[in-house]
Image 1 (cartoon, one colour):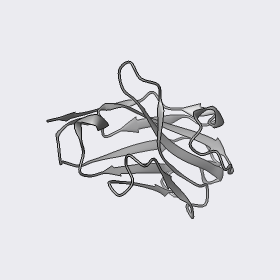
Image 2 (cartoon, one colour):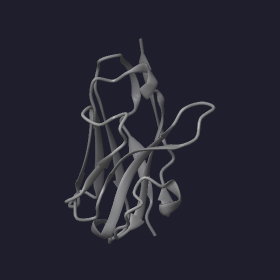
Image 3 (cartoon, helix red, strand yellow):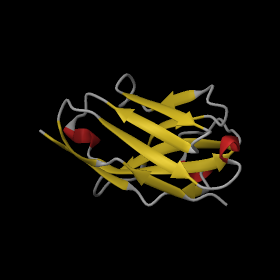
Length: 125
């Protein structure tokens, strides 16, 4: 069982930066692939970024590539999402998610077994 708690959301101006954190419980965090998804009002939840359980693989949605960076610290049981050059279109609730080991379907929300409660990110123009 894994519990996920996101933090770091807030209000930022366009062009600014934020770093989201997702703290995980459980003894086997290092065996879980982790991801960030986001959901804007009236839209479906969409993939943002993922990192493999080993940290050797990272994956990004085209819309955030070059602006966002996902990383993990297994000793702290935490995954991060560094967001730069933020745009109003990045406004959404951001969710942390996890599944054990690996899969080629990192972008698919149905792959994930555990979810956090979400943290709001609002980018003003």
